[in-house]
Amino acid sequence: MKLYGYFASSATFRVRIALNLKGLSFENAFVNLRQGEHRTAEYGRLNPLQAVPTLIDGEHVLTQSLSIIEYLEETHPMPALLPSSAVSRARVRAIALLIACDIHPLDNLRVLQYLLHELKVGKEAKDAWYQHWIVEGFRALETMLTSDSRTGTFCHGDSPTLADICLVPQVFNAHRVGMELLEFQTVRRIFEACMKIPAFDAAQPSKQPDAH
Amino acid sequence: MKLYGYFASSATFRVRIALNLKGLSFENAFVNLRQGEHRTAEYGRLNPLQAVPTLIDGEHVLTQSLSIIEYLEETHPMPALLPSSAVSRARVRAIALLIACDIHPLDNLRVLQYLLHELKVGKEAKDAWYQHWIVEGFRALETMLTSDSRTGTFCHGDSPTLADICLVPQVFNAHRVGMELLEFQTVRRIFEACMKIPAFDAAQPSKQPDAH
Image 1 (cartoon, each protein chain N blue to C red):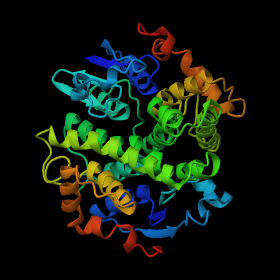
Image 2 (tube, rainbow over the protein chains, first blue to last red):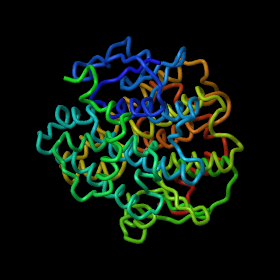
Image 3 (tube, each protein chain N blue to C red):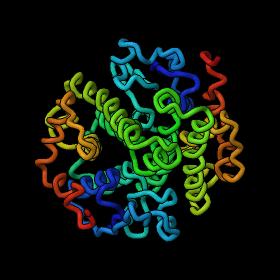
Image 4 (cartoon, rainbow over the protein chains, first blue to last red):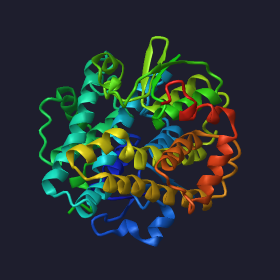
């Protein structure tokens, strides 16, 4: 398999964690977002949104991080990244989607660039925007985690799932802008548990060959 | 089952379509977003993000529209809203997530309100923002649809899937702000095919009891 991605992209980070957890080897293809390499016509043929990641598996071209991870789960079921019962799977997916739909899209690079260059909001307002959506989303996430006995060492039980795969890159994003996340004790506890697992640790941005 | 939602919410609209396609009857509980009914402590106990929809199935409380639809697919498999092969499922989910992650979150009510009230960008800039993300996302979607022989009457083959369930409410949003979508011929063709199906038609905002 070949993963087109960028070290600092959270969505790529999610897929790296999933591949590592499943013990799947993959080749990296680096797409430097800061230098606009995702905007080439060549890359657009793989990924029409001109976003990362894209996973190539044989003749198949796969886009959207959560779709890629569901695909990996279906094609390489063990170790499982989703629990077995429909209700538990729904809870894990709901946590993952809370992060992937309600936090991350508001803070990604193309949106921040629109705020700065089109809306000309200034760095301070851009940073406040960035933090606002993390705080709002993490408040909901912390409540979901603390109010539910199914939360364990990880977001759901005692082995990592798709929910943790989304949580960890989002915490990295918060750290990158200096947020300490003091009020989100369960989020922080789970983040720390995840980072003790080599599959998460090896996937972190600073350990990627294209980190700069 | 009981669906907490709002007539104009695209995420609720998706779940209404899925329930209708599967022939599942449900009771409506109306949460008026314009009047802030989602911000009550009572509703927050069901949905910590204070967003719609929330589906109650017996003792289970389910949030996040795509997670709810995957749950319905697992608990009521027929008619299927996802194809059978992992690669095809990945394509359908990628289309759904392109809309659910890369278009819709940028244009929802809480974000537009932040633009207006916190960033004070003015109505014209807010409308340009709204349309920008639809155009950017639909360009990618149109390319995904036209460049792939698996596109049929619907986004994937000749029966409606999760991809169409996300496409239709997003087209409604575009229409609501006066966008004609002339350049997106395949999106429009699929939208029209969907709207001939009673399950889609009956789920549209103007036909809900809370429409105003």
